[in-house]
Image 1 (cartoon, rainbow, N blue to C red):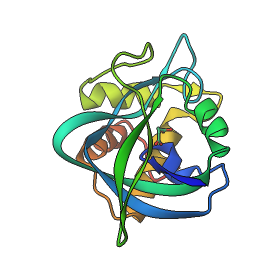
Image 2: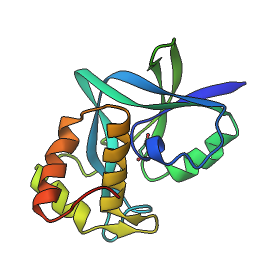
Image 3: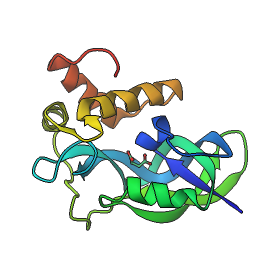
Image 4: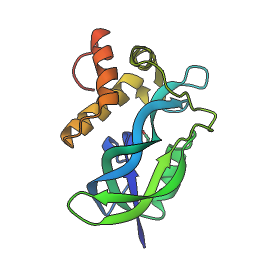
Length: 174
Ligand code: SIN
């Protein structure tokens, strides 16, 4: 028995797990936001970084990558996404194919690592100044931008932060 899991952040570009197949996909009613704190990957408990979560937003469309995985892979994913994310079940529209029911890792506002909204210049400066065991926060950002570009996705929230990062001297991709 296999399951679909939808990635909208690092799960798009860092598939460090086995999968049977993958396909670009879309979920509706959720918007990607750099509103979650990262204590364990792109920051530390005393200086958390900023990574993405999804927030409910009527009419929003979030595009990412869906993977069909064996159930055993959830052990790895649960550990990787342990800092505030929980599994929710949502419909995932696979591009050019069926809509499937699958798992999305969401960090809701009630989790202790949630940071919430901030102006783009503040988010950009925060990202630029953060680093954790998985590397520089700005590399997480740039990898995500590059992966979304490859998928042909324009994300205005990321565009705003990217402009601010460029203003701060960040160039190119990770
Ligand atoms: C995801 O990619 O779907 C979850 C957030 C992350 O790990 O960056």
